[in-house]
Amino acid sequence: MSKPIVRFAPSPTGHIHIGNTRVALLNALFARREGGTFVLRLDDTDLARSKREYAESIEADLRWLGIPPDVIVRQSERFDLYDEAAERLKALGRLYPCYETPEELEFRRKRQLARGLPPTYDRAALKLSDEERQKLESEGRRPHWRFRLDHTNVAWNDLVRGECHVDCGSLSDPVLVREDGTYLYTLPSVVDDIDLRITHVIRGEDHVTNTAVQIQIFEALGAHAPTFAHHSLLITASGEGLSKRLGHLSVRGLREAGLEPQAVASLAVLVGSAEAVRPIADLNELAKLIEFSHISRAPAKFDESELEHLNARLIHEMPYEAVRERLAELDADAGEAFWNAIRGNLTKVRDGAEWAKVVRGPVTPVIEDKDFVETAAGLLPPAPWDATTWKAWTEAVKGATGVKGKALFMPLRLALTGLGHGPELGALLPLIGPERARARLSGQAA
Ligand code: GLU
Image (cartoon, rainbow, N blue to C red; front, side):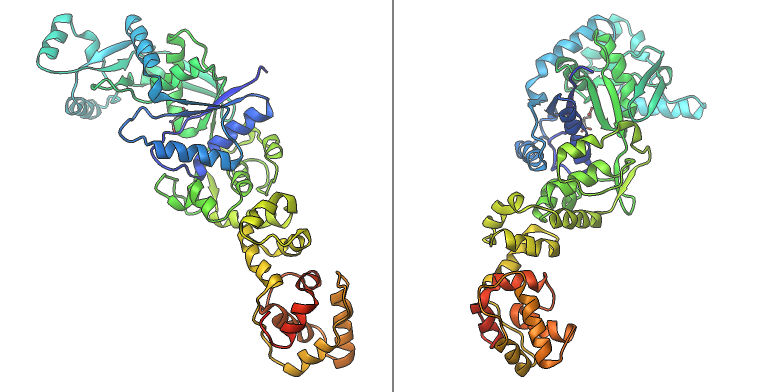
C-alpha cells in the first residue's frame, strides 16, 4: 500500500467530544502505523458559526491526545477551489440551477407522498427554458444548484461495512450550492479530498448516505474516489448520541477532570472493536489494534465511568519518568520511591498531591489510644529507615503488646497519616522519616 493520507474534518463550531476523538484517533493512528500523513481539515465554510477559538481548541485537544496533525487546512481559505470545481460541473451539465422555494418543494413532496410516489426531487428545473429562467431571475429569484446524479448503482468496498451499494436512481439530486452562493458540505469535502490526495476517508457512519453522491462527484471531476471506512458512532450508556452540547464529554472537559489522554484514547478506539477495552499507554501499540473490518456495525455504547477505571489502571503502571514533570507542577514531586508507593492508590495523577502532603507534612495525627501509640513510638527502630523498617517495627510492637492485625495497624496509620486508608505503610514510613513519625506519634502536627 502506498503511504496513506487521511483527514479529520471537524467543523469548528464547538468543542470536540469523545465521539469526535474516535474519528480523529482512527485516522491519526492508522496514518501513523502506515507511515502516512494526518491532515486536520477545518470545515469552516459556515463563516457565521465557525469560531477561531474552537479551531484553536481542536488543535490543542489533538496535541493533548498525542496526535498533532501533520498538515492543517481551513476550508474558509479555499473557496477559489470550490468555485472552480462548481464551474466545471456547470460546464459539464452536472450542476444545474433550481428556483423552487422551500414551500414549493414541500408542497410537491406532500403531493408525491399522497400519490404513493417516492418524495424525490422531480428535476423540474432541468426542463426550464432560458426564457423561463430569465423570467424567474427578473422576478428576483436566485438559484440554488443541484448536482445531476447518474441514475446508476454506485458500489464501494467499505473497510468497515464491506460491499455497499446505493441505487442513485432513488435519490434526489443533492443541492451543492445554496441560493446565497454558499456551499453545503458535500462539494468542498470532495474537492479537498482530491486536492489533498486523500487516500482513505475514515469517518462516522452518519456519512454513509453521502458516500454514493460523493463518489459520483469525484468521478465527475475526473478523480478516483478514495477508500472509505465508516465506523460506528459512540452512544452513552443510556443510549443517547453525543453532541457538542455535552460539555462534560468534551475533550477539554475530560482533560480538566484530570483524565489521562491514553485513557480517553483507549476507550475511544477500542470500544465496539473486537479487542477488549483496556488501557494502552503507548499510542503506537493502540495503533496496532486498529482493524477496520472488526469494528462492530452497532453503535458503540460507552460508559463514562469506565474512563475512571481505565485511568486508574494506567496510573497504577505509570513510570515515574512519565509523571515527574506533572508532579512537580503540583508541587508533589517527592521522588521515585514516593511515586511508586502511591500510584497504586490513585485514580488521577493530581490526587498525588494529597500523599505528598502526608509524607512531607504537616499532618494532624489522629490518636485514639494514647498509651498504645506511645508504647509503639518507644519501639521505633533506629535510623536509617528502609522498606524493612515497618515490618521490623510492627513485629516489635506486636511482641510487646500482643496486639495484632487491624487493631495494630490502624492506630499507627491514623497517627502517622491522619487518614484511615492509603498506600502501604511499609513504603510510606521511610518517606515520612523518623523525625516526623516521632512527632506525629506523640500527637503533634508535623
Ligand atoms: N465536517 C464533516 C463532519 O464533521 C466531515 C465529514 C467527513 O469526514 O467527510 O461530519
